Image 1 (cartoon, one colour):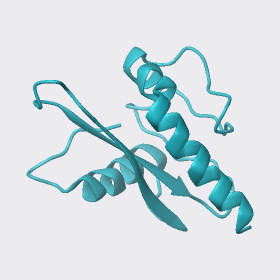
Image 2: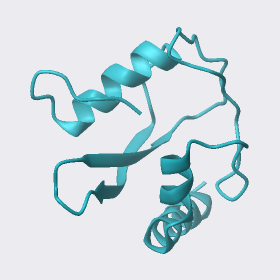
Image 3: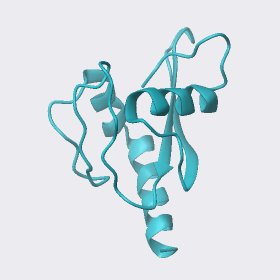
Length: 107
């Protein structure tokens, strides 16, 4: 996750944050998956699914506490409470399942 800077579009924030925190911003496909918006509209969190052709060892920075390759149904623990809330959201889970089903059908 990361905060937009200087009016960045969500996709630009994603690419910048991935470069900073993973050492790459090159993906086979990027799919906007879900958007969380606070009730008062003051906070928006965009979630993307980034497809890579092969697993890789990321080049992390001080903002990264750790990393792991996981399946879309088995998340690491503990999760940030807001990340956990989003991952358990029925709408998000449905979108993620549809996306992963689509990817697996086209492998």
